[in-house]
Image (cartoon, rainbow, N blue to C red):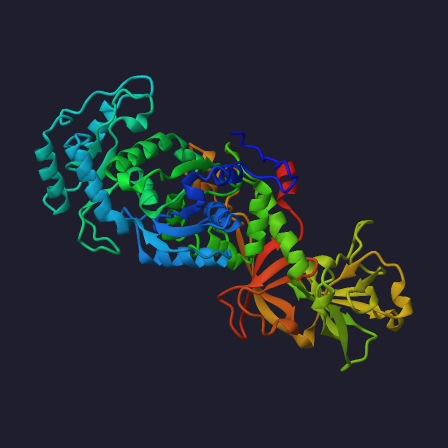
Length: 571
């Protein structure tokens, strides 16, 4: 079937190729018309944005077609797994807006998988191999050269059963022996060349403790777990496409021992994984960044983890928008990070409250404004949403503006504050700069201007044309905050393809800048953790989890415009 979207004959929304498969199966009453999917993460790390794409498909298909999606933890390797990751995965799925039908673990099926392995041994289709992993890899051959049989391939059934039991009761050292399926060492699909299906691990399991010492491999546990649960559509990323024939072989063999299950069987379908520019998606590499302190943790706002995006200020809706834009196909590619940023801008544009914040403040004194006077100016909360209302911001004689908004000797097209030029102070008055004061080092410490009292926003004279509008906060009525400016974690577009360079050497040295002494309007005094705002003329920000009353901390979610494309074009 084509990987392109398919337009149904009734003219309704186009279907991706997996939705088309599901509708076909429903029409043909495959598996009695049931739709059951599963999301099967391994609890060995936090979920990243690539997992979000799989979550949206697994849970979305079930929701759209009246089915069920279960959450199943693939906990077959106790060396790497932890309950911390289980809890984090559950939090991420719920934050994205999904609910699972049931929670399962591959470890729920350890006994059933063991019994199936015993059945294979008794049927002469599995054997204990005592070769080293290097020897096994070498005798498997190559894609163009058949493998050779293990010297242990024809070991007697009773001996295989005895050794398999010893693997599980702790009498066999790790790496000393494995259980392999006996299939076809000449098969062009390397996965069929007597794959390893059990290995010995002595590390206690986070759920089963020391009960088991022999653990199933992914290829053996995955399809059978789907079968035990009643999964109809097993959705995987494209790297598992070459595993599908083995998936089918194991399921078909299992069905021979369970004739009472009738015609039911799960089917695997593959879709393209998500690859983003300026990002790595390898859990191993992400764990390395965390363990080596190169980021502050799994939820560092620079990380591509779901919890990292949440802490940075991304919304579930923006993630859904992004995934809808990129879709599901049968070919891999790399998605520009700018598309993800575009999705959060779109979302926050219609929901984020507009406030004033000055990140690099310099004092502006309105010399002809009465000392001691304060006016409350009306500020629109969100021009895209009339129902959002307004709030008031205090205006006084002494204000803070952005240092970069003033230039003493400005070029012709500089339309911000410079001596002799008029600008509008947003929601307030038109002012004309009259000069500035410098310290001994030549730094601007104060700027002076005069206001026109007839140009207050809403008055007839306020319509007078000026080319620049600046944001500001009142010196006497503002709060001080820390602002963290986050940017892309890597400085190169595709760090995963830089084969001759340690990926850690490709980290962007400017991915985090911490600004202290920023000035924000008092409206933000009671802002809640993770609440989103637009700092006018600067970008979208949210309240960091480190923030507390009296010590506000904000993260930059995204700038108002894509600045990276300009940097890339220059290079």
